[in-house]
Length: 279
Image (tube, one colour):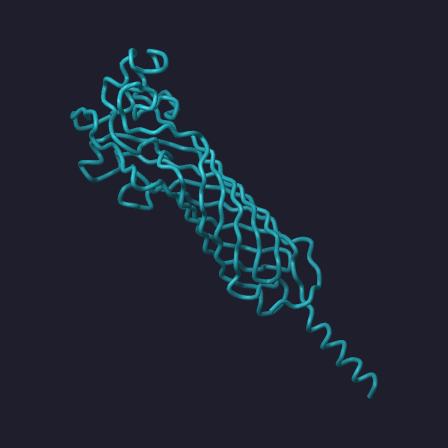
């Protein structure tokens, strides 16, 4: 009888312990979608691409902190817009965004890879981070030109203008929803959607009004005459033959630019132990 009670005690003790990863590293690949002045309707096309790496530290079965690095390729063109007003504007941009974020995540179900019934969970995450951004376009001759240095909304001009100078860095606030499934105690698969609210309206180099031709006259432009000529060419690329005058609306400065990634990936658990259950 003593040995029976001892066996029951061992079983009860082992039942109060479970596999718990201490940390996780992963990689994700997927799509990227831009929302801003060159996608005013908020459509999900055209589709671009993204890739990311992350390190996640667990604090029990439900809570984790994640450090993520992502590469996000964003682009849009008025040529793809069916609206005559936006199509005629003729602007476009491409931006290879580098992103670093810190996110707290919460599992809806107790997640314990390797324990039956606890190998799947939906989750949400909310964080803060920064991006490096440098929008560019191509001239009619196919030459790649970075737009920020040109000041296409008059930022480099001494004439009155609405355009605001912007730097290469900006803050972002990512909101994530996803699901993860443990394939083994060490390996997980996940699918995740992350929407970023940003503190910049210049991912696309478009925000306020047209500065007018006078702003790019070499006498008023605070850079070389060659750069002034390039800025003049690229600030108004209308396709409808209607030159935009000073003060005409170029973008919507009341709403910052945003972007979304949809990724699937794999992650690897490590530093695991048989830890006491967390309820």
